[in-house]
Length: 465
Image 1: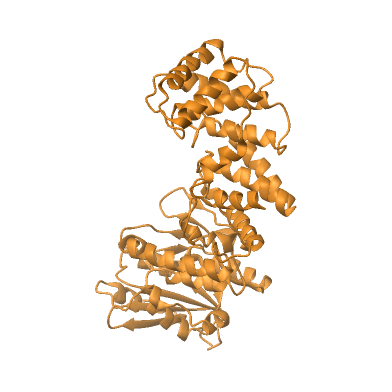
Image 2: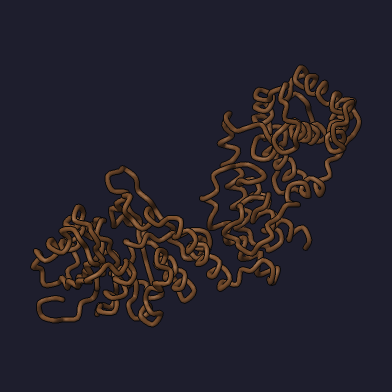
């Protein structure tokens, strides 16, 4: 506490256990803050190295040193410190990280100016690496991101002591994920966020909780996520369809950056289709704009290394784009838009591919080509040599009748090449993709895309509307 016994504005809580190698840098980064009005409660959690000796060497009056005779655990110690704290705000600190000098100054000002915010984290840098991690600053996104992952780095956090005290601070039953539990509970009460300022250097090493107890931490995190999802009212089986779709669309919009693949079955193209349909259903134009942006990004980054396959490759992208044209979601010249995809498929397909499957093999390619040749105004996107080679493969499939599905798709291609009209049944197409849907209520365990995923669940519901 400060020398004049004035109640401080901020209480800093820092457990320390066997951190002699990092401790001084961490402590010094707090003591040299530009914001001075704080108390620094350090809980030496039964350390067996030089941690206690180092802590006792400090004479700064703002330090309150508490010694646990035995190692009680990180969150037990945090609760001990929180219950002793007197500040309006509590700042979290880990004994192996380094706070930037202006951390408290920035965070105090932000919390004072935003009384609706209950907790805030910040952007941070990975110590010893030229890597900056930026977290979402929008509560409308964060509250949905929390369903599937933690998006507030705990040692960057500041929160309102009075609010969290009423909640009982940390629930130590979640021993290795109590911080995640705390944040989700707060998100149900009011706003949580991150500031965009980089305020901490975060150290990664093999003695952290996330390293030593990762398996147990993941189990506890899943439990927290499911409970939080249910408390949000986002239940798949016991749902109000309109409310559930609203939650699902918001969840996918908030977590889109976590979807790396562009593919139709498991990637962003499936989300594009869902967003267009949801925008049409909800009359919310923001989802059309989001789908437009995603589609433009996908087409801008159609790299040669993307596989040819239907499930997560070029054929799936091409099928999806044709569907969007057919439904009037996008406008323009379909052949021009698909020119690059068409050429890459022709150049990269293996004609002697033994994979005859729909998802990854030749049947998926044939299905895409049937779609293209049944809709194209011109056929010069593909060479005659290519079309003839594929025709030979299709004839063999028709002759061998390896499967009814394979026979039907191959027969459609043969008809196209013979000039007979063929129409793609889009309902049948999507039934092939989204017939396998998640059966459990754990949205955080679902894929994001159409196959066994969130977009598939949403599209299935929308197509029933």
